[in-house]
Length: 59
Image (cartoon, rainbow, N blue to C red; front, side, top):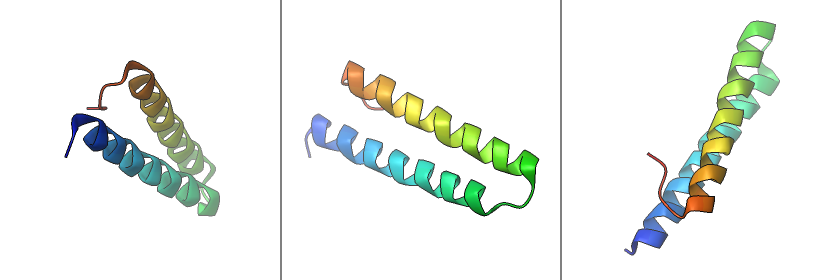
């Protein structure tokens, strides 16, 4: 697989994980936990965007 393909796969996996975190936040009844999950999802999305704009795979 090419480096571009690997980085695309990694970004796709990270997006899926971020969505899982957001979904968990949506179903959480604890406001603090909900906020923490949303923050983690936001950070992952930001990392994906940074890495995709640089053209390098996220670590």
